Image (tube, rainbow, N blue to C red; front, side, top):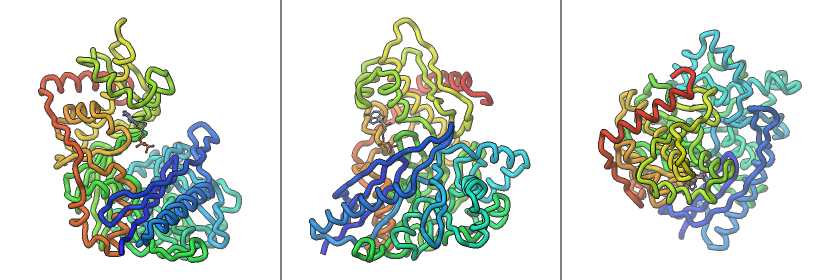
Length: 494
Ligand code: ADP
């Protein structure tokens, strides 16, 4: 009897459901976009009810596809946009405020005030994170302080907090389960990654009552079953992980030293560091990669805010390309970058620079600079930023064993070639590029015994292309030196 695994991939702009077979092969995808709210400068919100309605709709669609194929669904895996924060009433299940999205900067001043009280080192030591609005903790504090009556209700134990995974589990089980996994917990700024528990001192610091918190489970665990009343069937929810961690699992990066790098709107690079908790000296984040059978595997993570978004800017902002795919042949049409460098700091710079005030700039233009040079400089910038992340990882004593890439941008072969050259490491693109959804399916499959171990999963991974590093050292050094010169011109502190 064949079985499917159903993966729910609740992302920042859309919600997807995918069906995978027992070999991890994608069989069906359904996707729904939802509304982004920008109530003030720097604020980003989602309506949790819309997140839920899109989820329910794609799940029902995927279940009916499974029925049509006459295949049962063995388990559900959930992967989600990380850090995004929801607080709801335990009795009614109704959110008391919109979801505050990871990109939201409203708690920047609060973070600054905590930093002024010298609290960053304690936060970093316990959580592996930086004191930044990105993470959930200060968002929880904001909701409790700004929604009428919220703090009193929280003190009475009437409210529940969750990242999106937790909210969806609550809804899918109709309130029977309030749980999260260790990867999502590790992004809240409330969770001690060493002890693997909610941290009393952090809860006190951020004024978050313990009664709000979910039970933290392994990434493959019993997260309850879908409610019969809701879906007509009880399917076990067996796997949960934040999106970047799920991609690491989908890429089968299970050995220390293995890196996955995802190129979508932004770029997220994650390095498996095994049982070692590396405290970065280069402003990378330390995070939980996954927790299986009670054993925690850690990772170092670097995020670049703008990767594919710069290609969108070329297309929609200044209109010099018709489609993202055009960028490939335009870049390839040039013998060199002609000395043109673009620093895509449209929304500041992420790791390892962490400069929110930096702004984008183009350097080295002459009268014969045209669209092709700008396109090439944009694609090159994605590779240089990755090189900066890799250097930061090297600086933390970590040499890469392999680099596996995914995300919408890696359809661009020119980009992949140039990336390998600039990094001076071969990079590999897998056959299955929907690695995030696949990772969640793998976690669910582990829980229900479709996969017996991560070794079986690792054997499923198949390379589609390998891009060889073959640029000579002097050329690479010159390109990187010029890039760094350009970055220095846009940053205030580097
Ligand atoms: P996300 O999951 O963040 O929405 P995706 O993984 O779907 O992103 O990737 C979409 C991004 O990849 C877009 O920003 C788009 O501009 C970029 N992109 C897609 N195809 C190409 C291509 N052939 N060359 C360069 N960039 C591309």
